[in-house]
Length: 279
Length: 309
Image 1 (cartoon, each protein chain N blue to C red):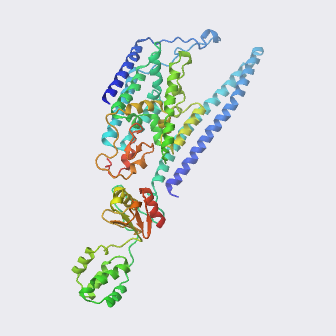
Image 2 (image 1 turned 120 degrees about the horizontal axis):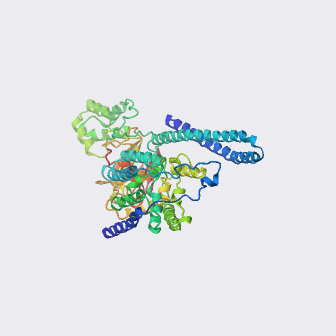
Image 3 (image 1 turned 135 degrees about the vertical axis):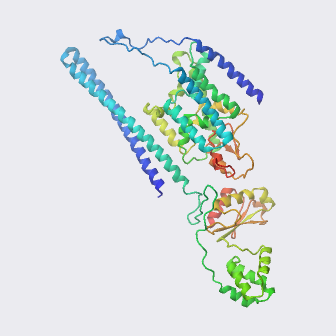
């Protein structure tokens, strides 16, 4: 429970208490009023026959008036307390609603952007890589310049991206040059140089999906996952957002794939849901 | 469009004439129904002042000019500066002055009935303040929309404060409930045009929030007001959208407005964040529905393309 939420509850209890007290005070006064009126009336009747009762009547009236004035003062103060408590409740409740930003699941733990659009740093640093696979791959595919592409493919399949450390090790142990690796890995779309998220989301940007709003879907998902400008993976490395040319199911446009699962006829909201179901 | 606006302006001016003329009538109503000195007896002395004195002329003028100024500032804040924060402060100030200090009186909503009476009863003398307060927001709405609702109205401000987690009302239900305000407007006019004894200022009598401004009131009105505020936490400004008879008039005037709220001025994303941010369901297909827009500027705040001054 956040402190704002606790404050909101406390204020709400105070508001309820004030309302209950005001209502009770009103009910008590309302039931007492006819009895007091009757008392005064009967005293006035008796006064006609017995003049010595005049001080009694005056005292009674004074008592009633004082009680009513006291109630008025009490209620007025309570009303101010009520107003203050209501303000406190609204302020803290608004904050506690605003605090847990996008309706993301706890397991995704999407960090929210602050107002300036600054993006929080990744939550976990990646663990140091186990490079022994590179050595086995080199043993399998050879050390010549021609084995560059099979090597890169093997590394990509194993690590799901091309880690800089692995590439450096390839250059150390084989005839493949850094320039060759840079050229090859940036030329083919199958290679990627940055770590990939746990799930890959392919948002279709084919013609049908484009006209039915793929751009809006992508924008919404980027906002929802707090993916920084120029990156394609969210800071917690749960999702990687990929814009692809066509998924081949134009009748479902706009469509996306999360790993093997396809979701079609999307709206920004249902696109979010599709992600939540996977995570 | 321009001709219709001109026609309405002429109509307003024409109705302003007799109302202004009524000012010339001498306002004297002898106290007859109250028990007099002789009937009470017992040496009772009637206090010298039997009816409350009218507010000083310069204070009345101050009220009117403050209303006009606040409406102007609201127009500027919403249409030009596009700032939710500044508008919030303006409406808080209006709540403090027109609500708690002036105790919710006079307000344009109630003045509908005063103006109606002044138009139909030659013996009724309407205060100048009521006339001005009735006409200023309407004329502004003819050109710039319902800025009054967003920045000046105390009843709107208190409801705007309690908006906590608004739900989007189903459009059809929203439309049906929205018809209630026309029924209420009709009732208000019906009760205003009746002869003097049967006249009933229902709008003021059943104003759910005025008892908050006065910190006292009939228990059923306080409970009704409380209920409106509790409902208002989840349904944005229910009184304004479904009941306010002045809202009905502003609604009509705003349809003719020259300028109004535009959600994204230059380049838009079509992301729908503004639609989600509008507690009043006044954004349809990513466009502001001007007649329903209450000028709260929340959509600007939610917009990623909008700079936040």
